[in-house]
Image (cartoon, rainbow, N blue to C red):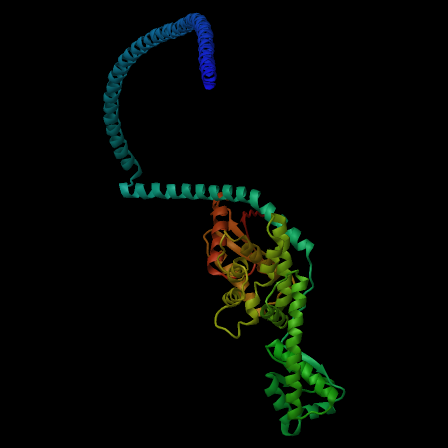
Length: 516
């Protein structure tokens, strides 16, 4: 019974709590409704405001687009207006051109009619002219007594004489122009190079002399029954000449290397005093080894003097052999060094590679050191040697082409050929035999005298210049120029000569009278 009030109180409390909670929920719902209503009103108001703003913006945009459209429309209207005016102008121009074309067509028609009239008149005049020419030709035949063939021949002779005169005038004109543009510059380059370099030359011979202390030494050199001299000549390949000349023994031979070996060996034997076949063979073998080393040294000195580096040892050895080789009594090594310097100086004058030019000049005659060991001329032999030892194509071509026809695309070959001619033709550089010299002079004069109109020809300056006296009666200034040109061409085709030959033609007129 004690639990009933408690239960009742608990139930009452629960009911009261439920009621209170329900009231609170109602209040919250009411408050939420009020807030939702306020938010809805605010949202509606904001939507209305934004709607009004969007309408205003749309109206402003529409107004702006409308104004832009009106501006673009005005521009298009203006362009169309301009095009209309341009088309109107073009139409006017076309109308004017059409009028001009019509006028020109009328002029062309008039000209065609006039031309047809002129052609007809010309044909009529040609017929009259042909008739007049026939009458004139018959009259000329009757007056001159010449047939048609004879008149034609005389006319051709006259034309030939006139053409010869014109050819001579053209040759004179072109030679003068070429001479003005080229001769002065080439002469300046050559003279400058020759003045900058000068080298002494000595004439080489085919014999060497060996001094002996007394004439008794001659008998020891000959030996018993000539066995010593025979052994010496066999070992060296030279001839030993022992005559009545006191204090001198002559060693003779065309190979200068062998002659040098013989000269040095003979000096050693005379100094040693022991002269017999065995000792001769020992001394000659020893001297040959020494000379080979000396040749290598001479080649190195030559390359240093010419300022050419990087040469193959075999090339250097061949350069040294050139020291004992001559060409028309000119030492080939000294000639090669001189050509190297001249080529380098000319290359410097025209702006080419100086070192390459010197290399080409120094090695251009290298084939002469081995031409007795291989078949062919020294240019081909030298080019093959240089090519085998890795020299540049310019150097190989300079050795191959410095005596033959030159290729203009390789200027170093041209320079080497010019320097070679300068070195070879310089006074005192080379010697010729008297018979060959006289024969060359006669060939020059004979070829020149074979041309019509030439009365006399004289070779001067050792064959470097030819003076030709032409008849003033049979030639003119123009034909004399042609004769000069033809003589020079004949020399180039028929003769072989170093350097160049100057041909000068003089027209000679002689007048004489007797005073009584």
